[in-house]
Amino acid sequence: MRIEKKNTMSNYSMEVIGNKAILSSKGMFSKEDAENYINDFVTFTKSNNTSSLILVIENAELKTSFPDVKPFYDKMSDLYINSNYKKKYMLMPASAIAGMQIKKLDQKFFNEIKVISSIDQAV
Picture 1: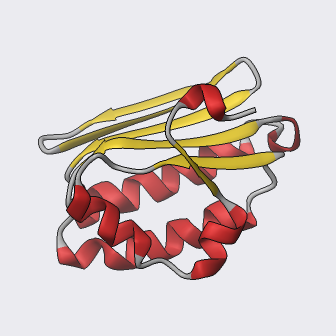
Picture 2 (picture 1 turned 45 degrees about the vertical axis):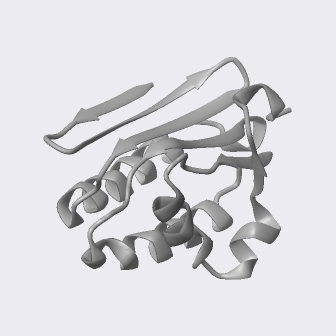
Picture 3 (picture 1 turned 60 degrees about the vertical axis):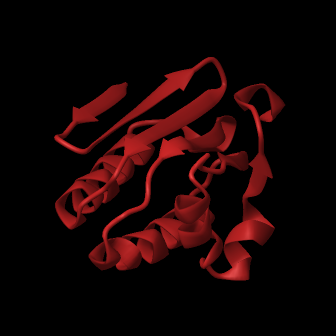
């Protein structure tokens, strides 16, 4: 299953490649984009055997988000943590400000999800 959304300021995709579920996000997310992403993530997760997959959250091209998107980060953090993927990894955004927004997440997030610099490190 592949999910792909292109919006005015952002786009994302969710697909399984080999043993990896790769979630790729780019651009600046609005509240509506974030809500759609959450719904798509739930659908994507339910349609795959997550216990046999490695989750890779590819945020390298993610930009700073609008302030009203903060609850999205919190909810997605919980969904990622509580999902049943075999292993969980994330690439931090190249944007320093977007990276700071993510770093404000609860420490539990970073205890559960390992930060990597390349998809190839997700093994």
